Length: 201
Length: 67
Image (cartoon, rainbow over all chains, first blue to last red; front, side, top):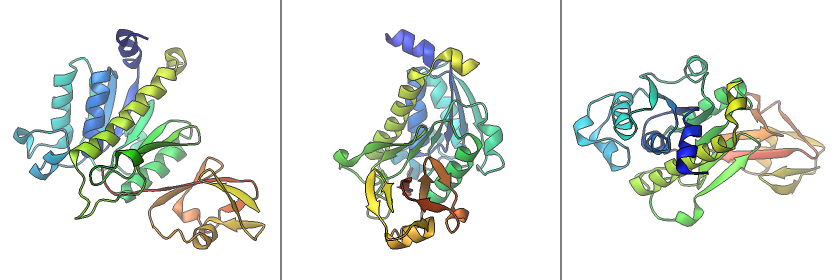
């Protein structure tokens, strides 16, 4: 497939991103560059200067809502993309409404409690819908242990499944970026296998 | 009974065990995780009641902070 054909195909899909931090912002940018037609992004946070070591924001955006700032950046990358943003904290009551139309969902939270909440909610609501999670990305180096694990038909985990953030193991742009782009790469792979006609029917 | 746990064969001296029992026997102490039995996600509140039987495919995933 030529890139123009890939882009045309990906343009027919909607991808949900839960969280707009290190994973979510970098994953969204990669998906926008790839030609995904529609992104649905939720986060309640504000851009802080401490985020700039790994998240796809700029110094002039400090103080802005992450959803607003990310939308601004995504449109600069790909003006054709349709973006729905929700400045809200996700929970089992709003997830079914916010992500209902998505073909695939990317989990991009920082906290393990939120990761669990999203997985439990999304997998029980939509048992067949692909969910791409991130787990284990703190620190630097150790490229060789970053991996993708497919659990059943529709749950994919990207990361090393062992590196938890701490004072001594901070999240940093290179390793967070690798995992965010692994998630985007998994999204592209799944959507390129899906027939647009089936998707729309 | 024999089960598959994260793609490896594991044997237990019982006919069936709950998820909570499996976590105790295997000494999986890290708190944040997802558990699937035969592709079905088991919610945390159901760990005491969800039963793992001979031949089941169990997948466990640790949820590490950072994102």
